[in-house]
Amino acid sequence: MENTVVGRFAPTPSGRMHAGNVFAALMAWLGVRAAGGRLVLRIEDLDPRAQRPEATRLLLDDLHWLGLDWDEGPYYQSERADVYAQALHALEGRGLTYPCFCTRSELHAASAPHASDGTPLYAGTCRGLSAAEVERRSRVRPPATRLRVPEQDDPAGTIAFEDLVCGPHTQTLAHDCGDFLIRRSDGVIAYQLAVVVDDALMGVSQVVRGNDLLGSTTRQIYLQRLLGYDRPAYAHVPLLVAPDGRRLSKRDRDLDLGEIRAHDAGPERLLGRLATTVGLAQRGEELGADALVERFSWKRVRACARDTVVFTA
Ligand code: GLU
Image 1 (cartoon, rainbow, N blue to C red):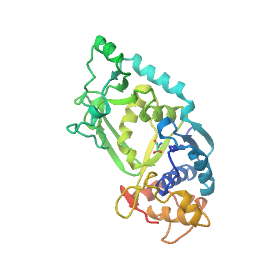
Image 2 (spheres, helix red, strand yellow; image 1 turned 30 degrees about the horizontal axis):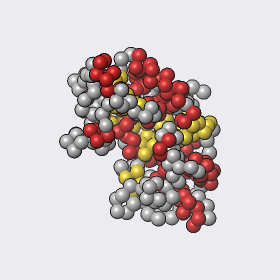
Image 3 (cartoon, protein in one colour; image 1 turned 135 degrees about the vertical axis):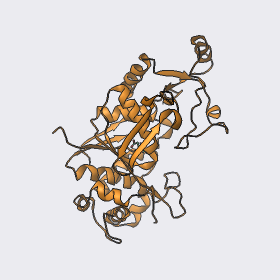
Image 4 (cartoon, rainbow, N blue to C red; image 1 turned 180 degrees about the vertical axis):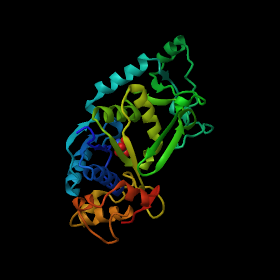
């Protein structure tokens, strides 16, 4: 059973799923079912500020309605603080981290260069603080924790991988993101660290998600190396955008499942339209998730994939 594909769907319960979230879930599900593998469901409820009451219950109900089942979980990140703390301490114990006191406005200063994913590139302001300075500043405000990335000319900081959908991808951490956060100043573990720990401990071998996270992957691979974890395969699927080019979002309540379920008899119309965007169904075809398993291959998805796909109501 060693080569069984273990995939996961890892939604953040910050609102009702929209068509883009369903698309990512469908691709993760197909990636597993077509390979006869196992799917883990993980609720990424790490950030208490981003939670919406009811969202998790609706999410599970929507997945049932869509016919997208899972084999393990749901696991809740909010219940896994201990495992993240262990990984954090392991990195701290090896001198790979440092406390960072920069405020949000300092980080977002207009002059700050930006990384490929739009986040400000960390300038290294707190990299060299003396112990006395750390002590002094800690009395004023609690620090966040950053991971030190290799210097620009150190080959260890250049990370390449082959994405099942997007093809080859390379980044140099010092240039593309700089030293990155692994724990926020309010004590919440950062997404990058939590996702790496969870994927490894849950035995995930195939990560399927929207390509807004393509730029995070090299950070995650770097953390896997430091923590001695295996690297999963990655498939970053296109983002769905509205006809005006705006990315579908929970905040704008774009095509959320509440509306879709209120108007449609079953999930087949939505699944058919999502499958069409990556060449797995004909225009106008309506079909259930099970019917797509035989048609699915990463090769087919890759042949059709672009960064974004226009999706209309
Ligand atoms: N929780 C993230 C989201 O809902 C996905 C994280 C991941 O797949 O790595 O966007």
